[in-house]
Amino acid sequence: MRWALVKVCLAVTTMVVVAFAVPLGLVIKEMARDRAFSNAEREAAVVVPALSITTDRDQLERVVASAGSDDGMAVHIPAGGDRQALDLGRPRATAADIAAVRELGRASTAEVPGGSALLQPVALSLGTVVVEVYVPESEVSNGVGTAWAVLAAVGAALVVGSVAVADRLGVRMVQPARRLVEGAHELGEGKLGARVPEEGPNELRLAAVAFNSMADQVVQLLANERELAADLSHRLRTPLTVLRLNAASLGDSPAAEQTRAAVAQLEHEVDTIIRTAREAKPQTAAAGAGAGCDAAEVVRERMTFWSALAEDEGRKVRVAGADRPVRIPVVRADLVAALDALLGNVFRHTPEGTAFAVDLHNGEDAVIVLVSDAGPGIPDPQAAMARGRGSGSAGSTGLGLDIVRRLAESTGGDVRIGSSVLGGTEVRIWIQLDGREPERRGHRGAVRRRRQGRRAVTFNRSRSLP
Image 1 (cartoon, one colour):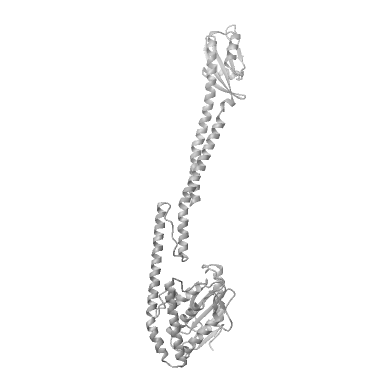
Image 2: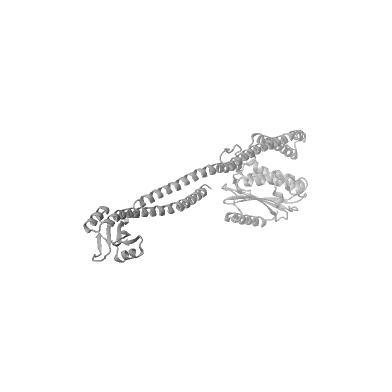
């Protein structure tokens, strides 16, 4: 916008300067010409009284010499009676030009070498005498070059001044807009303290006021949300305490130990939610350099936990690709929460006896986690990915899949829901290893990723349950 304003002012000022300077320069040139010929007319008028008094050659030559300068004047006296035609001074005009002036009886100019000649006829008793005054070209253009140079300098100064003023106005308009853009980017990146100075033109100042008001409301809404999450989580402490006390009285059986471990883990997760909400820290964040966890170890651990319940319900379980370490840039607790959310959905939304499988594929730039089942499937996968909507069945809130999605997107990956070779639902978690941003649709990298995902799914489908 700044350079557009400068270009507009430059074009407008240039047109105005040209529109006024060119005609003014032509007027100056014409005024210089008129001034030169006016001086020539005054010199010719000096000779006229002498011609009316005497026709003596010597006297007329002295008059011509005194009136003219540098042999710039000549007098053409016609022949009459016993008098021959007489030419005094230094004539430059041709005989035809002089005869034409005598015939017309009015002053005229003639082009001569080095300039022009003013031919002024004077009617006397002895005939029409023509007074010739030489006007050199240098006298016609005297001062014109200087005047044009002054006009050009003034025009250039006007153009430069208008550009400078337009640039300052552009800066005054662009800087507030740029600060508004930077503030929006900072707020989008999670810097809730980002504010914009309320200055500049009235429209941008009003936009800055609206932006700051919006940022304050966002901060207030987030604070209210954090307090609500902490309060709701705190309410879970009472039923958890009851569960823990009841689990302590179950004895020493393996099922009792698993129940006590589950209650302890649930208490830990509730405490984490409360602390995170109070401290205003995101629950899912990308791991720094050297951080992360072993996805294979997490998969083995969680499948060991869920296998006991699967055995009770008569479900067949398969785990593939978790036999060697697979390092991913994800916090262990986040991956545990994501796997528990998906496996919990399997137990919650499929009948008893439904088989399920977890496959782990380690690629060069990404790790794929596939959780598939032989259940009825999800009728609308796109709606199921929407936060808070769920699959539409009883007890589904949609928050589990949202936890999985946020975990994948924190690494630059994504989550896809499709049909499993087992006949039910397949959830594919794409975890990017190099920390790149998610690629746009249609980009070659996205196409390559989709092809790799299809190859991984094909590899998964080539296996069968034991």
